[in-house]
Length: 401
Image (tube, rainbow, N blue to C red; front, side, top):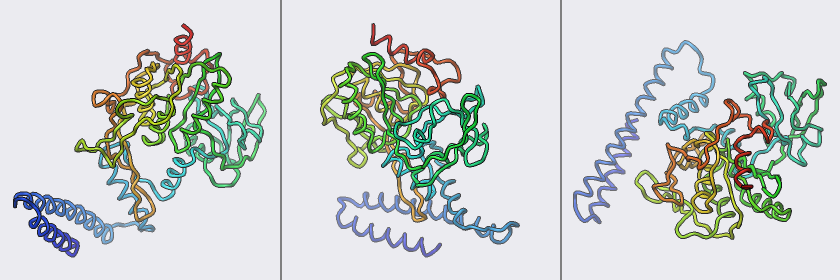
């Protein structure tokens, strides 16, 4: 411990010497010196506390410490949790690999979207992607999954069980499901990369659902819109309800597919001092889509999805329909750690096209047309029939009027 402190003091003296040579006044040197000493003092106190706990555990803990890596991970996770920021978190090596793979390739698995319906106490397949192993094995929307890999799905374990349906590992998963009172079992392969955007035509209106903002989202959206326009789509409703996944970088790329070149920027990331963070200035460079837009949002629309909705409102005059969004207007960045894990850390505030006055962090976006859904249906939107989805119905009526 003392060795680290002495090295820190040596570094401080070196910096002081360099600063004294080049600084205009000794006041600057003193300011830098004090800042370094304070930082070392804080770090030393933290190291001392951890070392003290380690000695107590070693001398007095009744149990057995079987895995030091687990302790290190817990220590790191606790440190990040102590920031009190729900958007910053520690990722284990496995979580880090899964997170980066998701950003690069989108969601992989057997090719289904699932919802646990609390009202009926059933784990339901809400959507099956075309060409997926799930579709090839015969699964369809509405099937009720009763067991995965031989273990029954319940309200208590469905989150963990659901994870078995996703991943890029080339192996199979046993899915037992019920349809029309008959129980069957299939074994689809994992590894299917599901598109992050999908769409359908309702009359001449395209309904496009975006599940997250990943590396491939902008290209997928551009191709989908071209296909829908070839089929006479004249307006678009974007559905980003319950969407928070992805990054600000990829959200800006997706926005750039849609909006015209504008004076100023699509967004700017600013650090805690108000400076631009690592040159994160996003501009509109591609051709726009000359169509009328509406965007569906709700209380679970967060982060990248909020930037998407905000910029379409402020640049393309899109009406926002639904309920107040989550209010996560910050940017997170991944920092790899020596243990193979990573820290996802909030590093900047996102300032959209509208400038500082349009920042939604901690406030959320207020829709121009507020439409409430029946209580409890926000999380099961995929199970709603079109006539039951009052927010979608309102958006369609606005375009038709």
